[in-house]
Length: 272
Image (cartoon, rainbow, N blue to C red; front, side, top):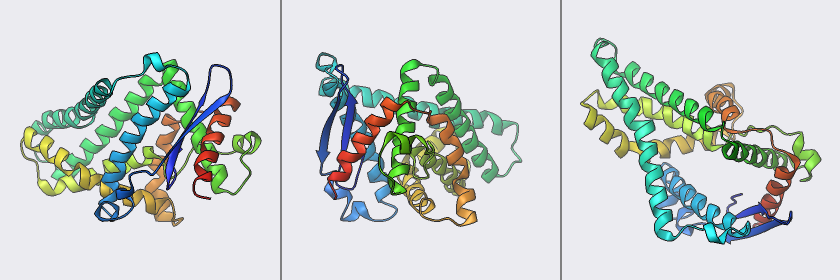
């Protein structure tokens, strides 16, 4: 669980107890100065999220008593690099190559529609990827914990006591989820890339990579706004992301809910 002043990791240990590790001071530079400016903070938060994710993984292994499986800094860096290369290849390079092939037989289609189609293809690839890996037992557990996280946050936002009974009633969907952020990235990217025409494949790939910080910045601002507004237009805008979360979350069991509750309590204690 992440809060304004830090984050906490809660893990069910082999003895059945829940262990908690807290990490304070989330990159202060992200909360003030240029990196906290609108349209800039989105890219900074994205980098923070990757860093926190890796650190949380290491902390959870320590809490679970798996020090012998802990990755070295070099192994961790290599794993992150491999994951980023895989993500770029699957979600940027592959859709671009596919649409380059389609473009050859659809030369009269407007560039905007081609970019929109590429964005939709990227979303379909992501959906198929999530559906495929969700069949893995370990990944399904991750999606259940994701659902527990959302249920607990929804309970906290509603002002209810953080009990298993209260949390169980809540939905696994949350408007500020990273899944919704990814859908905004697809939409914003489709519009922004249209201003650069339809150059060669290499130029398009490089353009998309270069504009990722800009796309992330705009998408983050839309995500923040959509989480606070209840207007019909905003609800319609965030609806696809909310629906998509049904793929990235699952209903958790009571034990997972208890772990999520302890993590949020630890984070909430740091700013109250």
